[in-house]
Image (cartoon, rainbow, N blue to C red; front, side):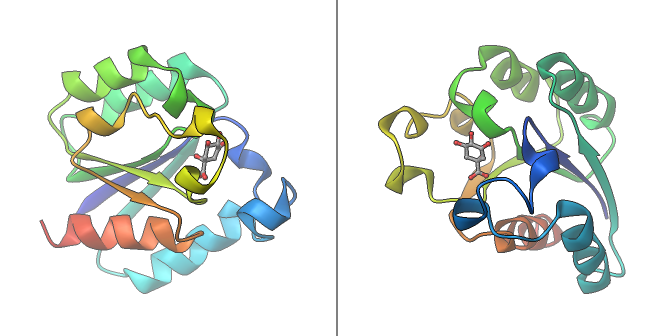
Length: 139
Ligand code: DQA
């Protein structure tokens, strides 16, 4: 199966960004581990700090892949445009968060994306991505 992982703003700084919340592994390192865990899947990775670039990647992969794993970072809590992009494509999107957003500030408790997604995986650290990929492989 072909799976696109999309990370939004500030997730390029994983490893050095607030390590007590997000851990100290870079996503690039984690992505190598993930590929080894799923040697039979084709995993592609994209990161952008820009809302429009995230939407473009959803459009680009959203009709041909088997699943999309999306951590939209803080756009989760603000972006009707990303929610509409998820509704506009046919490939199922799994929303993921590294931290348990429900244990954090009130403004992180609402997601515009969740109701447009197939499901959400929240709060398992980097393992949230593995759980999401695994769920797509079980569709
Ligand atoms: C996050 C949670 C968001 O609230 C935050 O803005 C992020 C990361 C997470 O993976 O825990 O950038 O999506």
